[in-house]
Amino acid sequence: MVELEALYRSRFDVFARVAATVTGDSDRARDAVQEAFATAVGKRGSFRGDGPLEAWVWRIVLNAARSDARRIIPPVDYAEPAATNGHPEQDAELRVALSRLPERQRTAVFLRYYADLDYVAIGEALGISAGTVAATLNSAHTALRSRLQEVRT
Amino acid sequence: MTDFDRASLDRLLPGTSGSADWDDVMSRSRAGHGHRRRRMIVLAAVALVAVGAASAFAVRAFVPDKGIVGLPPVGATPSTPENGVLEMYYWVHGVETRSRNWVYVDGRLIRLGASRANGRPRRGFIEQRLTREGLKLLRSEIVSAGGFGHDQPPSGSESLPGCCTLPIQVRKGDRLVRLTWASNLKRLEARLTDPESWLPASAWKQRKFRAYVPSRFQVCAGAVVVSDLDKPRQGRIVQMGPARFVALLPAAAQDVLRGRDWNAGRFPPGSRCFAVTTNEARSLAKALDGAGPATARKGGAIRLHYTFDAPGPSRQVWISFDPFLPHGEVTCSQCG
Image (tube, rainbow over all chains, first blue to last red; front, side, top):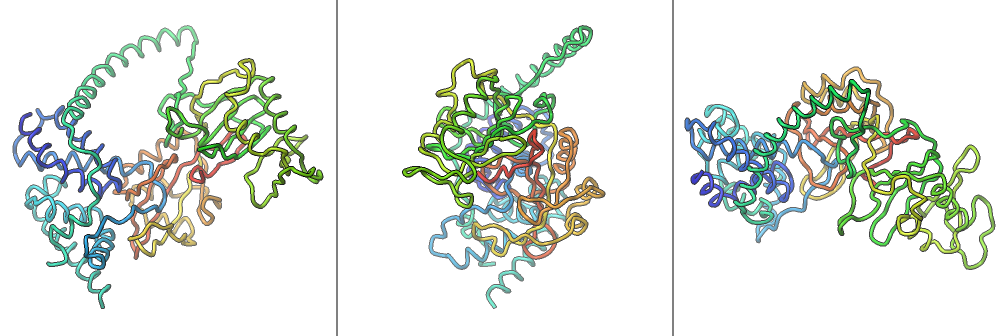
């Protein structure tokens, strides 16, 4: 329980911001994280300790966010872009390129490069093997590179 | 990969809404635990009650007291009778909200986006019931407010040309006629928006807001192309037959949507729709929940709506569920 609380307090922001890429909304992402940690507290007995605790929690958070995302969504109403802090063009290109990735690739990218998870932890969080994580990230890189080059040429 | 470091991602991600709150996590966890225990107790109690009730041929109605968002909860009692004749219809601007209102000969008043509760807009379709007297009072409020058809508006009145104002209609014989002028439109709209403030207690069979629980839903679907995912805007509808857009969906979604009797839909034009019972709608939604990743888009929607990324540049297929009203119309619940 102490570890769960420590993980929550130290990584809340990272969980909530990555969850927002799935729910498409910061409020709903926060709610998904709160629900996910509540679930983790209730089910902590089922954590076998085979992998890192954080990866197990990520899986619950992503499931909660996906479950929220599947329901009650208006047709095509996109959120305002986040502030760009002086990198407007590059950020806009990257945002578009990322938004066009399949959800698993996009989430893998955020888990690797924003949440700093290793391949094993990402695999645990996404319910896939480490080898599949490598292939997923490789596909994401290829797609992003080609889309960014396409935009800039 | 310089385009793609942590700092870039940090700039792209939306900010966190609210701060960490471990006490909230713990209270949700306790509530969940308590809820599971309570559910077991309630299930046992329900089983006992069901046996007793069945033996007495008793059926108790379960109607939620808030407008339904998405599909009605399992067990919610549909509004009766299933079909109704429309007596009045008005779409009005209140002080802070817009509302659409359908009043039936049987006294039902069904409202969407009607009013505010504790300072927040009410969501979903809600239902109240008028007595015969209430129906009469509401009708005379409209009829005495102005004129219909080709009546010549008196000087000082406001005319309501069909093109540009929200409609206020009442039944005359076998059809609905539109109010074409009003002596004081603001007053009329205020009265129609808030009938609880002036109708007497004897006008209400059920003044309290309850959910309108429909018996049937219309399922609509279509394909859109979004030209710029970076900016908020509407997607462009792709004119595509059901067989083609269904083929773009994940396999599990294709399975439940194939072989349906698709008709042309109104919201938005170009969509294709079919009708299902509420139970069938639940089964469909369950299948779609497990069909694959649906893409979330934010908004305060009332309808149940799924959006799936489809193969092809910026292409998406959406599927939505909207309730049928008692007179057989499906309204655009997104239209405000």
